[in-house]
Length: 110
Image 1: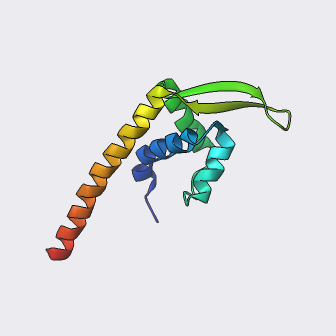
Image 2 (image 1 turned 180 degrees about the vertical axis):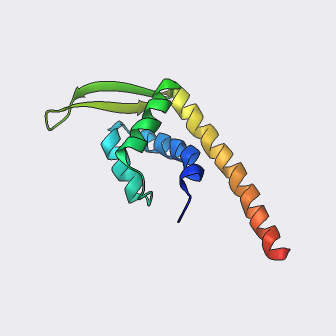
């Protein structure tokens, strides 16, 4: 689909929080998970921008350490603030989904 970038921008933050909530992970793995979920246009740069923003907002804890292949890697975990934000994200999503579904019904009936 065309022109999804702007619509997805805010949504991807919530989806990334949800992925990190499943357990400690790192950027490359998050990008691959997003792509597996159908967000095929997401690239590593997008993921790292989102992770930086979420970290600056205090939702993620990070730790740098050697990965299993011997390279330094930054690992992300969701902290309490991040869990609260994730809950708020899903609450907002439910509200918006309800509004959009109502609007779609109106269009069909109109």
